[in-house]
Length: 181
Figure 1 (cartoon, rainbow, N blue to C red):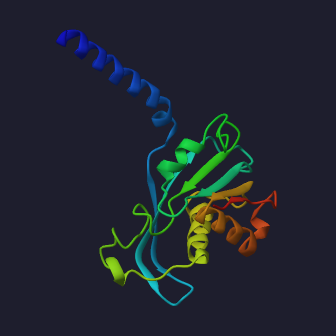
Figure 2 (figure 1 turned 90 degrees about the vertical axis):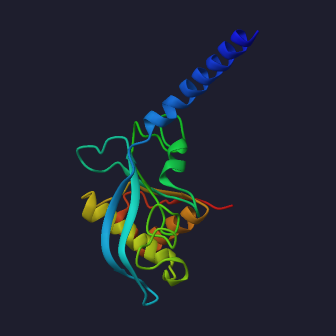
């Protein structure tokens, strides 16, 4: 009886791992863009700022299929991975998707992971600060001058609106796709 129970448990574990494997394989490795000391709209400064991100899909030869997808409050680029891929919210077989970890989420510069500005000494941020850092990621780190679109959910949706308000000329298709909830 014990042997049959263990075999069933082992089979369940194998099936669970195999079910999660396609999701895990679709996510690229976590990367970081080091921004140095980042001045903020409110006059503050993030020391040694870094922005976490992952990319999915292939940037086409014309560099015209990039979509930026900022995370929601406390969401991560790893969480966004579940929404990216063929047949999902953003199709990575058609688009080069840049999933960005927003400041404060624990992956990018945050009160919890800052060496120099822990906890309450971490500066106040605006959506504009986040988007300016993302613009630098896109243009300086990835070498992309035009985006196909921006998409965001909740706080990521607010960042999508900020992208369109602050940098409308960077988009080929001037239609952000923000979701709020």
